[in-house]
Image (tube, rainbow, N blue to C red; front, side, top):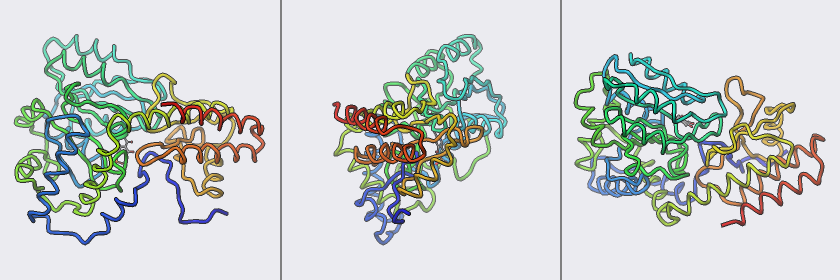
Length: 387
Ligand SMILES: Cc1ncc(COP(=O)(O)O)c(C=O)c1O
């Protein structure tokens, strides 16, 4: 039995929280209309713009990533608008549901779970829309349910050519893990959540909004109140928030963004890439298969197909013995895959440890040889030691 209370979170959110950030969380709250809090909002907003590589407004909402996506959709679109939704996993499915719930007409572009969306299909539908009836393209960059990264750079270039449609993008598990240059790719709405690459607990979400999206927001007639981005924009002019924000999470955000700036964007992206390569190559040495197309592996999560092994049983053993929490498969993938989160505050030791835990559990179950267990570690070390 593992000593409890030493939980290692290797799921794609909530992610581990650094000590400095925990300390910030435990401070006594301050008034959210005070000068001190306004200064904090000014500083976190600047750092959020840095993280998003944008001059656009970046708004902070009290709510999870879904709130940020919903806010982007309902603040910029109109009843009955035609939108394209990309769907190749659980989160893509969610945005189709949200769009339909608000009465939007959805053109679905999908691909099998585990495979990326095909940018050429977006190009075709957008080029055929001569009347410019398509008002937005809604898609997920890193599809957490399958560990696939979609080619947002290419898809966004087709959206730009269309010129009328907005891009509304779920970057919940890509922002802070790989390059999402919002201005360069001219992304209109970019949504993310605090419990992911930001390294803070759940409760805040962020929406970057372009000028084009603000122009669309002027006409938008979908029902909204708490998630009306116009209210957040107006308040941000005074470095404030329309409602009582999660003050302590903003303290935490200030600390985590400082840590990110110290590490530097490029170094953060390289770290996530090394971890992705170490895990994905190590699991192959353990008779396991990658669930996602190897050319499109998410920087933040690796989905592993366990074939004849019950993934839930494996996950449970690893949790009980090592106190490492891995994520399970969702929907039809339950018991078929497990997912290793390597997003946010994760270091090389976490990666070596999780690979060792998976290897020794498989060894104990009689599924691999000790030679394979050793090879997995050698392979992982090779990628961890690469620059
Ligand atoms: C890609 C992606 N989109 C959206 C969400 C939803 O975020 P939340 O649970 O914070 O609402 C998640 C959460 O895991 C996610 O991974």
